Image (cartoon, rainbow, N blue to C red; front, top):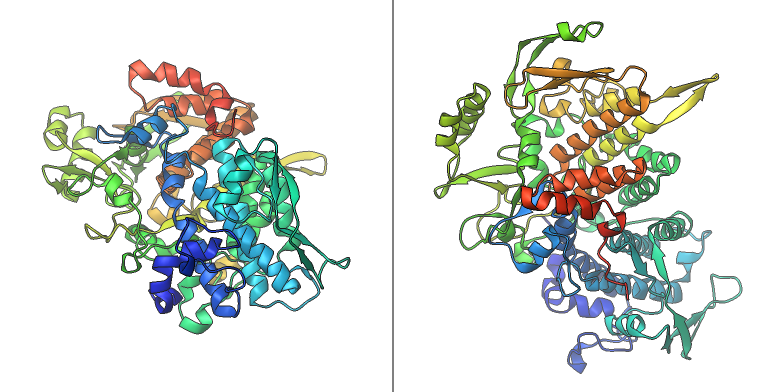
Length: 621
C-alpha cells in the first residue's frame, strides 16, 4: 500500500511521538537538539503533516489495550497457561494499577497531542473556528484532532467509568501527570485568550492560571464531546489521495464517515436511539456513487476473510493501519499464535467457537406454530459457519500443524452423529487459535490492522436499534422490527434506490445464512435445538409477550455480532450496553461467567452483578 509516510519514514520512526507532543516543556527528556519547540514547528504544511502522522502513531499504541480490555473481559476470549500476569488479572477481574493494559497513559498521550494541535490551529489558523470561512486542509486537520480526542475520551470512560478532563492547554505528558497528581488545583503557565469576536486576533498570554480537576462520567463525556463534534467540526480528514492516489488512505485516517460512526456509537451507548439512528443512517443510506458501506457480495462467502487482509472502503470505515516495513507493529500474532517464537497467551473460548460450529445450513423444518409440538425437522442440515468461523476467525492447531478443512468437516459430521470416540481421535491435543490477525501474515510480520469501525458493525447496531424502535401509527404503536430482520438476514428490507446500485444480501446472507430456514425466524414461536444434532428439544411461545420476544431478538443480534465481530474489541461493551438497556446486570454477569471453570463461575457471576465492578477504578482514591 502506498502511504505518504514513505517520504518521511526516517523522521517518523525516530521522532514522531516527540514531535507531536513537543511544546515549551520537554517530552521524554530527549536531547536538546531533538526537542523542537512550537517556534520551530508549524512553519509550513509539511510540519502539520508530520504532527498528523505522529498522532496516528499514538492511536496505534492503543490497539492492543483496546482489543484485550474489550475482549478478555467478555465471553469470547480467555487466557492460556502461557498468559502473563497482566492478562490473568484482566481475565479474573483482579486488575491492579500496575497492569500495563489498565494504564491510561496512552490515552493521555493522545489527548495531550490532540490538545496541542487543536490549540496551535486555533492560534495560527483561527479560520478553523470561524464557521463562515471556506473549508481548507487546516479545517480538515482540526476535525481529525477533535475526532481523535473525543474517541480517546469515549473509550477511556468505557474502561474506567470516569475520566479526568484534561484542559486544552495541557499538551505534554509531564504537564498532564502533574495536573493529575496535584492536590485539587494545578498551576499552568500557558493560557490562550481569544478576541471578542471569537475568531480573529487571538492573543497568547504566558501567565499563570489555576486548573481544577474534574472527572467526567460516561454521560458527561458523550454530551460534551458529541456537542464539540456536532458544533465545531467543519470537515474531517485531509485528502492525501490527491497526492498519492491511494484511495484506501481515507479509511486509515478520521473522516466524516468515522465521525458519524463515533457519534452514532456514543448516542447508542447513551440510549438516545433517535440521534444514534440519525448518524448510523448517514452511513447505511449514503448517496455516494458506489453506495459504500452496503452489505453486498463484495465480501461474500470465502471472500469474507479478505476483510482482515486488505483495506477496502466498501467495508472499512476506520482502521488503525500497521506496516512492518515502517516498524509499525503490534503483538497480536505473539499473543494468539501457538508456534515459536509466538507465545499463545490468549485463545477463543468454547462459547465463541460454538457460535460458529452450531450454525446449521440447509435444514428442512416444517413448522406448525398453531400446534408447535407437531413441528418436524425433516433434515437437520449441516453444521458450521465455514466462512466466518474456521479458517477465518479461528483455527485448530495440533501436533505442529493446522487441522485441515477436511478433518474439520469430518469432525462436525461425526459429532452430529454422536460418534464422540471418532471426534476425540481427530481433536485430541488440538488447541483453538484466534486467526483473524494471522490471515496472510508470515511468522514475523506482527502488523495486522486493527479495525475500529466497519460496515457490518454499523448494520448490526441498526438491527439492534430497530428492535427497540417504535412509533405511533394513527394511535397504534408499530415497531420497526422488520427492518432488523432485513438487515440481519437477507437485506430484503432496505432503503429505496440503494439495492439498484449495490444489491443488499444482509449480514447473515453474505455468508450463506440469510434465507429460508437458515435465516433467523422473527416469529413468536421459537424452537429450541440440540446444538450438536440440531434435533428439536422444545419451544418457547412469545405470543403476547412483547418484552420477552424483544429480548430474544436482541439475543440473536448479539450472537450475530459475536460471529461477525469476535476479537475486534467490542464484545464486553456490547454486553454492557444490553445489560444497561435492560436494567439487568445479571445479563452481563451470566454471559461472562459462563466461560470460567465451575470453581470460579459463581464467584465471577456474583462479582459482576455489581455494575460498579465492570470498570477499572484507576482514578479512585
